[in-house]
Length: 178
Image (tube, rainbow, N blue to C red):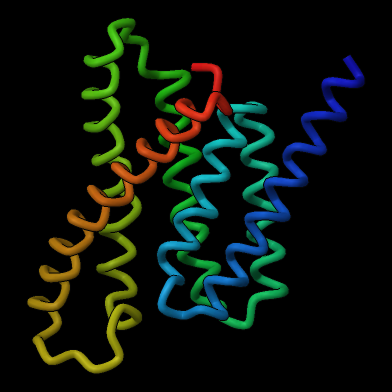
């Protein structure tokens, strides 16, 4: 019992360290900020799958605090927070609320749940903080919001597909026991 708990804490600590390194690298290599931040959030999903929801939440809190204190780019903190919030809630829905047994139907329903969840997080962020998304707006306020909302839907499709491919990659390498 105690050995399993120690292995779990060590695994979460290693994932937290890798996540923090990726977040810092995302700031240093500004072209890859979005990619490395998303990859960092994927590690939270891996932690949830491998060690449980409480461990994934613990990892994301630790990494959020480290990112807040160590990373000079404070907006990266908000981006990582939104990615982690999305993944944690999506995994909770997948593990606890999505009770369908057939895998294909379960994944289709999960895709709908994830889209709703994304819009619950993204739409208020765009409406409340649309000025953060661009320094020089060439469009009027409402046009820019509509463009951001549309672009966000495409970004969500890419993010969600990449998250599923990340787990497929881990499954093929036998790092997951699905």
